Image (cartoon, rainbow, N blue to C red; front, top):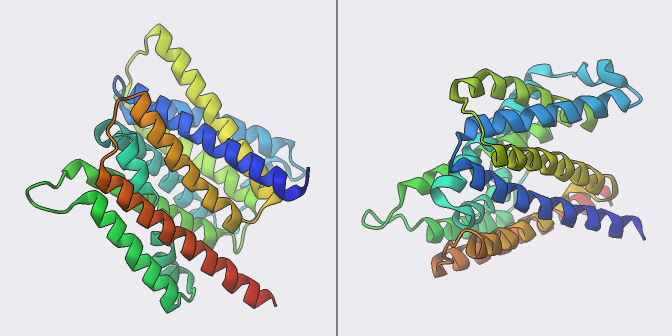
Length: 291
């Protein structure tokens, strides 16, 4: 199997597991606080990160040595916060509407990359971003008579995720991926552990099984994503993330009985098309700089 095929295999596996992970999070969120779920999930994730760091050539000491530690800690806090808000959005807004809004994240990243990263976004990508935002508005339906305030929660999650992505790009300029990955797990676990105990509820017998499965999917999905990035550039992995939107829609309909409204379908198609065009233009600009 070629390197590209291997990378795509791991990418599809990662986003398949991500979709299952989201479904488990939604199931547990009906009985337990998203903050508690995030804390227990992060305990397993932090353990995985530390084992990976210890087994690397640089060891734990090398993983801790970040050139911009405050930025790395901020990244970890942002991702942990995003996961908390995401689980809450699954509970109040549902898988389908949440994932549809999350799909706009690459467009927000493109906007933020201009003032924060100093990147140049041409008129074509600005047009795609504008079209994608129209898709978001179609999903949100910001009419005073019909607007659902709960949709602000997945929107907040998408914005936090975009901030995390931009911070990750900024950190990659001075620290390698192994350092960033270490701080993602450990800093996030510190934040989750500082908040989660205040929302502690004893889990029932079967729910411990679901929680263990959630931790397992969290570890395996990140491992598959790491392996995908070993074989593919990030710009090639990102479009596969839209596959998760389709899976989440199927799970939402057939497992949780959610409805697939026409405005969600139309808005999602517009956002995905705009996002794919934005990613394609970014890849084209990179090739031009290399050539």
